[in-house]
Length: 197
Image 1: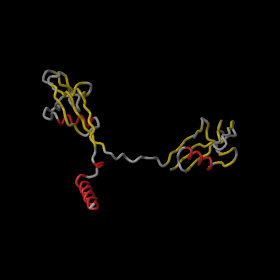
Image 2: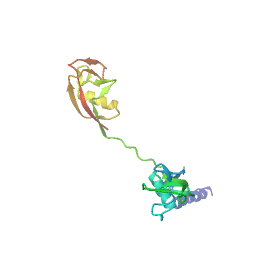
Image 3: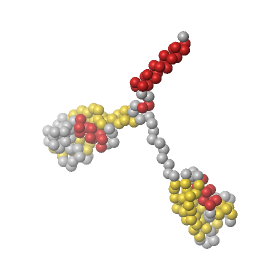
Image 4: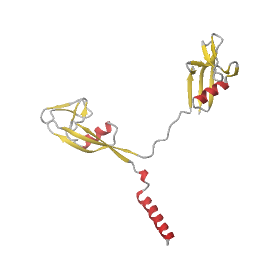
């Protein structure tokens, strides 16, 4: 008897998913009200400059200019006196100029965030550590070139160094391995390091 209840419950659950879909598939609506909406510093006119497109069309276009999908509500404000037409420099002056009291804009958001984007490689020109140029050698005079470049890249969150170049006669450098400082014309550093993920 209890098995039939589980089977019935499971079949109803599957049927509801087929009919309604998974809850996370539906986007949520986000609303924002714009009271006394402005365009070019003055109140937005209720109609387009041709006088034929009014109300919902203008409200939708205004919301789209602000990055929303559409408008779901708007209220007319009669006899404002000075308004600007949408997508035009033209103005309406006088008692016959109507505008919007408010426009409610709607946007859709899903519960599936976009996948994170990571750069596969990045070039570090004149790489530094603690304000010093990275020394060509990992430890003073040892493990030069590739070892120091790989160490720098791993510290920066990358897997390895893809490419690097040496620069001679650098004033001051710091080794990554033993943190030894070098001062003078005998010091060598990296001109650049390309790190790769």
